[in-house]
Image (cartoon, rainbow, N blue to C red; front, side, top):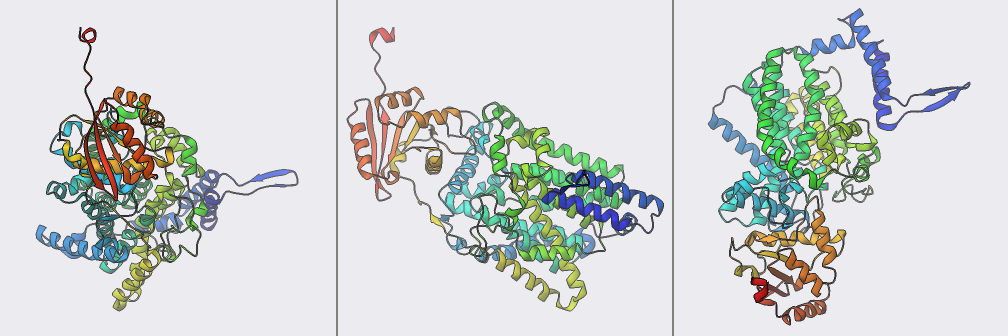
Length: 626
């Protein structure tokens, strides 16, 4: 009965992933396409077996193994340490994982003025710069970004990355170059994720060497290089800390551990909204299994509830801002969500930056190149070999849920989430759930490394070093980088901060495929912070689309009249961005000839010229004044 129950469970997982057969036998249709039916049969059979003979059943053995006392806190494993020792340890770990990331992402660490492309990274530079600017000047209007004038709450059109921006703000306040500051923050996401995964797995296994393997898997997981231009998607360091607090809460039932989990969850949500929602779904099956395994009481429930209240209070101001912009932003179109839903084949597509697999495995669709590598999967399989504990079973079930959710509309969990959980209708890419599968592989890989190390304890660091090396070789990326302009054009020096100017930057996009050009103007705005009718984000308001349509014949009279109507006071033109230099000369000649425009500045920049014009204030006739 145990074997049959496990076979049905495996069948349900197979049907959920691959689909099931349907065939006719003697006129009778037999269908095995319902994974829920197989799961219910398996649960019924295993429960009946447990009731008949609890001691020798699969569930009985699981519960017995799960209830064995295990480490729940690093202090129990390595002795009491004061704040100074913990700070020293953090510095050593951050240095070690920072060195791993620096070598693995070479030459990024010596090219801190370069980025992967001149699209999303420039947008992220604007985001963190805007937040650091507003925090000390006008925090009550933090979400009213200076783009898409006159739209309000434009920072809510994409992930505001509030916590990462606040973390790095002191460097910007000290006049650090925004591109260098961005890259330091970007790479710190890799390293800090390795550090927090190390702390989690060390507490779970009691082995530093195994924790080092887990930290390396998570720090340089291939998914990170598929999203090498997305800052917020590297901010995964809070999830292992939340899991650390969850294990401690259910094992020790202390209020402070529950509050620590709530704080870590809030920090993750405010670092990446995608991951906050995803992680909430991920912890549900893990918590249920750990609760059963630890035989937790209502004291643990009270602690977790207190943590949940704390998380809500911390996230609530951001949630309110997003709620206010919801009527404008609306929900994602279902066909877009379907396109960015993974399928099983995507997990065999290496990301296009992979140095080892990029030429061996054909890259897939953007956002859906999810091949995790062979080494992490193999080590995780070793970690899942029986006997199992509640932590490993719970992690495996949570990882299976993350895998299914990454399939989006091709899976069975995400369609329900999309229909019944409102925030999920605002998400574009279900495939990003894959990072939680990567986190699961890192945790289970730590258990696998621990099993190998306990088998050959004298070679523990040789085993750990070999596994880290294999992981690094598989995940090694080839990173083409582009240099960012060290200084924007000097034409903006004539715009004093707070002058109330509204800029229109040219050339503008000619189609949706060219909207990325406005990220350059957002980057330029970090030196003047005037309002822009241009903008770039995860959502483009109707007013921006109307602007692009009306500017197709710029600098015609109707186009300029429309800009005046939109409140534009200045025009900036950049010859370096015009594909045809002759057309730039033609446009500027027409603007120079207009009596209602005044040329404020013209400077050499980018191998061409940039100019700034100002609309002259119209003199009202006597009748208009009256």
